[in-house]
Length: 179
View: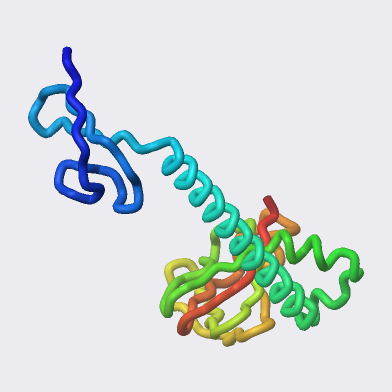
């Protein structure tokens, strides 16, 4: 088999090289089988650029994680229940929390289900609904807002949920799992 070489214009039809790469198109004689051969300098520059972009993306992710951690710590210190914990436990608690979001009408927890998660409302409001008897109508008994919590029994025991919690609007919460 004979391979033909021809110069190509990067970015032109049939050439897969970027407009910044110098290449030579190599053909094996078949129509439409042109493949760019990128120079080693261009390839090294491209790999260096990709590595730099990856480092920058990782750095940005760490900055976001750090900001999330600090905002979580600051918020948790305002929750009366958690203020009783020793100060050295707060970082561990903040690290274990996950931020979750719910839309209006979403059922966050359902009465009767066995749960493993404890929730602390950060933003929004949620209704506490209790079902009167099996298959009975639900009655709203309370409204929870920022700093309120529910599901604490799920961290300690395998008891069914005592009430359902429904998002009344957009809700953001921190959750801590027993697992």
